[in-house]
Image (cartoon, rainbow, N blue to C red):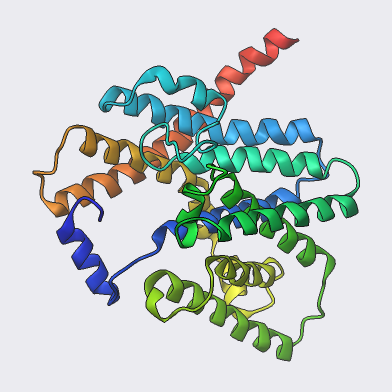
Length: 316
């Protein structure tokens, strides 16, 4: 949409709007990540960090190597991949296209794991203080919306990621502590709430002109839906939780998103804008899906465990 005006006009025309805040999906990624991170707090911190690293790094490394081969990305950024430090400075994508959130997510999760290392009561106090600081930094950015963090004096997307991950952690804690007795009346009430949350989130993304909330209010709206979905309080969340394909698709979502970088970076590097709009869209979307599925089943499920066996033997 950024590079092809005709694609942008057709997409915006289909939604009947002049703007789409699709980049806000990263916030939802952080919120969901924080939600599941809370349920792992009982495990050893180092084990959690290793699991996070082994889940995030292989796909990013694979995509980075492909972008080096197929585009103008330099191999000099390899240390940033191994340390997952992309996104920690003023927005710096190692692949040149949208990978900043991987490093932000990893290091924010590490910070949260350390905070919850001892007392959970004290941890929530520190979490609340840091989330408040992040809100202040985001609010006082020079630009409106989530882009304000690009130009704040901190110069890092960490303030954006930590606040969203914190919301996910708080939501998970509340859903675990608050258990409501399910009845038909409660189910109807939560179904209405779920429908309202979904409608408002979609409305914020598509029809921004008629929206009065700040962008972090949408994260809270999404968190309310997540709270209901965690216990299947409403009919909508019950339906979603029984759709087996959602769980299967979630395995590939991270890989597919990273895989689209390879094709976008290739188009940008080789100035292949002479291709038709439809062909360009087909290359990016179909290529990302195929490459993402390949990465998950071959790299993560076969190559990584195979290499891990040798590492474990050497350690022993």
